[in-house]
Length: 330
Image (cartoon, rainbow, N blue to C red):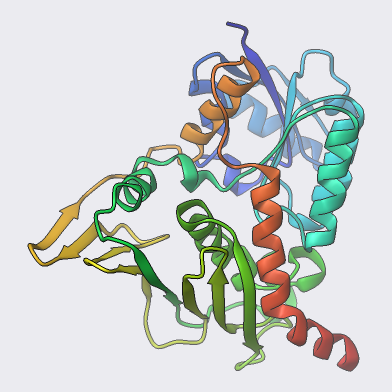
């Protein structure tokens, strides 16, 4: 079993705990190089995490012969650029979520990796976490009967952003949208994983508070290929924090949170059963393990580029009217 040697492009906050250490701690995996445009910060990250090499140019990392696979942990606006760079060097690619700003960018990334014969995965890491594997197991085993409906909701109070220094996550040119794109993508991907592809989407997106240029409240209606309908509310102008998705069936319902530390609950005629399943210390490590195993011919990673594309397409459909209106007024 060979050791897969990873290089990271963009060692920002997400790589400090969520992902970076997972490349060292996964079996048959090593982190051998990191890159950041600010070379001093790249060097500091390498020193603190015990990484032997650092770079301030992506091409240098990608073409390092000691790097077998590349993790792109930058904001979405350069995901396509760096994916195409790594694919041309015939290096497998793992890219942060959302996969890109639009479904068209995702398609270009998939095409580039296919042309060079390398795999492409997306950091929808909840697909490999025990908590959500439990939800999938419950659904697949018929714990609530046949699924009839889905409702997802995420409410958060408005963030106190400095208008002069907005984070990239609420700048559409960088992120593809706002917090809906950043956060709802996780829930939408989980629903794709649990219930299959979504074939129809209607969305209303608005900017209620004008704190930043992106949408701050999105309501969706969806239909899965199976015919199951669903709804979703992602409101970032609310009076409270709330995070719950409910999947209702013919014999009960399952509830879970995408971000909050809440148990998985199953409600049936027998009562309520709770499953308290802690998150991993490094939340991406279980998914990293599946990629390493796939590269070694020992399994398959569930967070495929094709699934990432489907989630991007759902987001595109939910936001297309808002995006079109924003372009007219800009």
